[in-house]
Length: 529
Image (tube, rainbow, N blue to C red; front, side):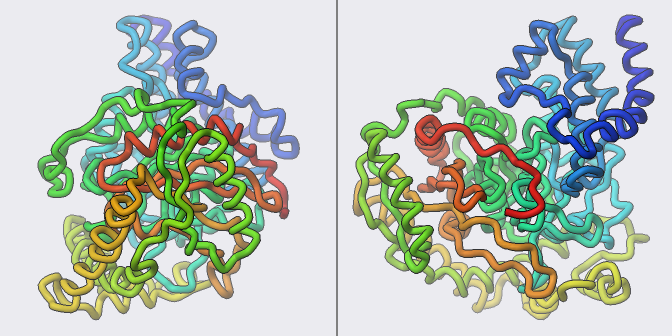
């Protein structure tokens, strides 16, 4: 490191302390005056390559936006904590770029991480729970190792629905005991959806370049849709699950949240890779490192798409919205089979609930057992007792009935679990996605991802208007959502989902649709619609 880089690194901490009192204060009442970095990763990389920007400058810009929009101003509450070493890391990456060139498209790119993914730094990993406050992971999750190796700047940790929204049947998405309520940047009184609420809001509001979310069922694609961004839920095993606070080993996966299909494809190529210590990853025959080669502005021409109608069949306005999307697909050259509903539509619902209860107990107990012996929670029963003892902060709005139901389950060898898991696979794979794809010779299935954002309600909990996440989630298959426009001032996404490891097909289709539908809706930070 030369003298200039040494000085830059040494002054990085001082710079970070001035951000809150300068850019934040100036933008508190006028968010539009905040510096907004270029929207695309390729533009950011170009700006760093030609010297008009740098990793340090980008990091400072995003920290200023977090201070002004997340902490103050509209107070989105999407970011739990920022990395105190972010500017130091950015300065070192700038020096490396000058000396050796960039490592790749993520070199110097600031990225936010959902707070159920372990990072070995000065940030905690808590899944939003006060029970895990003070847990500093001794090692990076494998996906974080891959991000650091690619040159990403880990900017901070995002808020989420506590325990990835597996705590109560009446929970409010985006709320956690540690972080409070995250707000939708399009209408602050509307839900951000969950559980990757903070990551999706941060991307939509330009608090980072890209973000990592996780999904068990809908927790990437639903917040992506509702916040007007792109989300990719990969095939289970494509991204290592180690170092992620679990719900279900059969459905959990991390994935990209981004403002464009290209950016999401770039991030997926970095996140995916082998992990012999993760059985799902070890079973993957081949990994891709560059999904951008599947991007195609004419990617819809000649493809066969099936329209899964039943998810919104009883909602006439949303069904009409889907009609408009289908016409766009036709106009872009797609061959449409409509309807193309899953033969056992909805049959996965009850079995999935049972599978998640069984797997959450087994998987969370194994995760918590790794914590130091002095830690207050080492298993699910400890967690339940902790929440009761700290009810004023952990249980002010909704209960923990899912935790209790899970704790009452037996082991994974019980017939009830095995029967439920078999029913899940039958309904979503053999008699589900794979069956309808084969019957109609389809490239993918299409539906609206979710309805528009509902009002945040801490009394009754979430009041969403449906979604199509479950079949791909339960099957462990990939799912991509792309902004499809707005409904009464709120974003809605269009989903493409298919069989295992069909990410390349879905990215092609999503990029073709993105080209047709036009630019995403930029958040207005309105108090309400």
